[in-house]
Length: 499
Image 1 (spheres, rainbow, N blue to C red):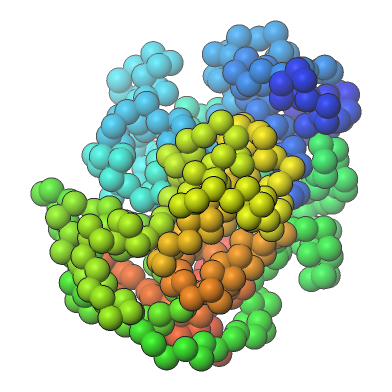
Image 2: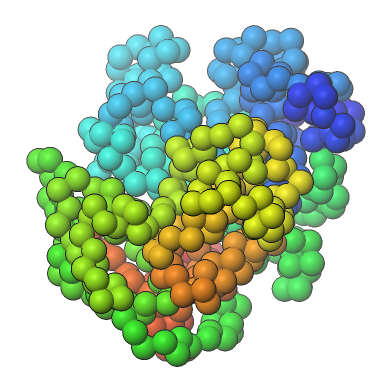
């Protein structure tokens, strides 16, 4: 059982507004709790209290009591809590200790000093449960973001903890991986584990969540049973600032056509990692010059490799972009393109959010920088250190820097990772604005809701090859959704779930 009693917490001793305010919550053994709410509402802080990272890693002012299965998290050493609570973080790279996947999967078991036979048994069980056999023996740094997330989940599952804490585990996963994640959570539930999931994507937990806790400004705003929550009318989650509870309504969304017929031509985009089959092989493709091009495909399909090649970041890349009468080879594309990476921690450099945006400008324009921050709901954080922000807030800072750069070609790799409904719409509005300014925007994403909010064209990549290139007309919308909205039988009585 997990018990929060009058818990208050504030990151940093000088912060006036608390991150958790008089939180009282009891989670029963074997219960699955879904924590939801807008970015910054306190979801991640709750997970950090359960796994002991607060107060033993993240500093701040903490009052009240947090007890996990009889263990006082405040006074117990972190290694004692770690034996009981397994954690999957929003950014999987932050919990890796090895460079190859197999070593990472067994790292925790080795730390516990388990017998060799038991470690091999757990490795076998975990790889089969998560479908990780194809990822074993791989270099972690050459995995896609979704593949890294799967390894992170597997490495924690191999420890057989009593409590599982998942902080946006689906943020970088494709549809097939989300199905696997759902199956694994259901298996954990059958084993009697207590599971706490902080999420913006809500649909895949239907039928699994026993209780849904909606948070707002560090407090519990509303609590529902899982059945009550997933029967709410479609308008209610939107009013609460939450993402869709199902994907069935997406097929009704109208899409706007693109009138500009000028095209950008992509030629000879080919790339292979040493001693590996080609990761990318695209001979030729035409896309709208002022379009917002959504790049879709499964994890590991080559989407991020294509994005890096497009920006001139892949060594030995021979690709050419024919744009506005100019042939741009990789070196020229370095100055013509701006890329927001999947892991934005790699591109946050300054001491304040405002300075981060100013850094991207050719000439400093504080008023314009402030306007961009305001459009992304970031102006209030302008003096704050970027690395002190939540994952979703960091993502928006990187988006703000891209907008400020005024580059001709802007590439976003999973820009809605960690974003709630309101902030996703703010990002999509800014991306549409870039298109209206004459920029060409490419967006790598697993988020069909986001695609329909801003994209005008689709590139579908599979195993490094282009298998779809079409405008997001009404017919294109249906074609795109046919890739995303695949259903699979739940396995417990015929109920079918989107994703």
